[in-house]
Image 1: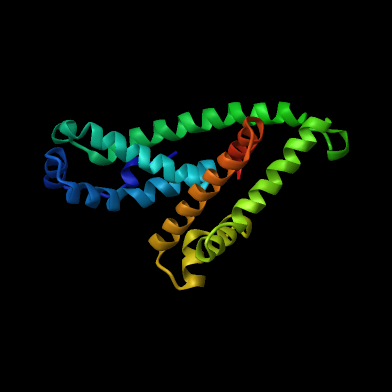
Image 2: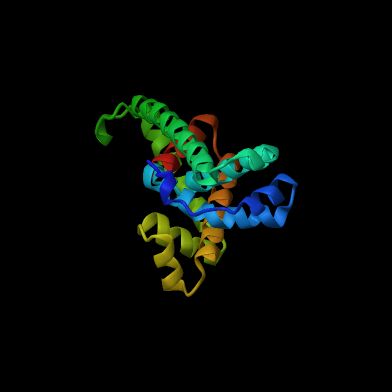
Length: 201
C-alpha cells in the first residue's frame, strides 16, 4: 500500500490558504499529490476510471474538511490515510461485485453458459464496442491505446505528442462518455455487467 513518507510535502502556508477557501492553493495541493494517489490507486484497481474517481474523492473529502487543515502536522500522513482507506474500501467493493459476476456467468466455458448469461455477455460486449466507436477521434485513440493495448498514460502521451494531463483528460472524458452511452442503451442487468467489467480491467 501507499507509503506516506514517499509523498511530497505541502507547506503549512498552503494548508492555511486552503483552509480559508483559497481555490488556487487547493489546486496547488491537488497538483502536488494527485498523480501519486492516482498511480497507487491504479496499481491496485487496474482501472483508470476508478483511479480517477479515487483521486477526486480524496480531494473532495479534503475540501469538505478544509477547516481542520491548520491543525494537521503532516499532510502526507493525512492524505496517506484518506487514500489508503478509500482504496481498501474500493477493493472490498470490487471483490463483492466480482463474486457476483462469477455467479452470474457461472464461470463455465462459453458453450456451457446459460442462454441468459450468454445474452448478457454478448449484449455487453456489443454495447462497449458501440460506445467506443461513438467517441470523438482523439478520445477514442487514447482509450484504445490505454485500455485495449495496455499502454501507460505516459507512453500514450509520448506516442501522440500530448501532455500527460491532456491524455488523462481525454481518457477521463472517454470513460464518462462510455458510461453515459451504456446507461442510455442498457437494461439494469447489462449495466451491472459493464460496471464490473470496467472495474476489473
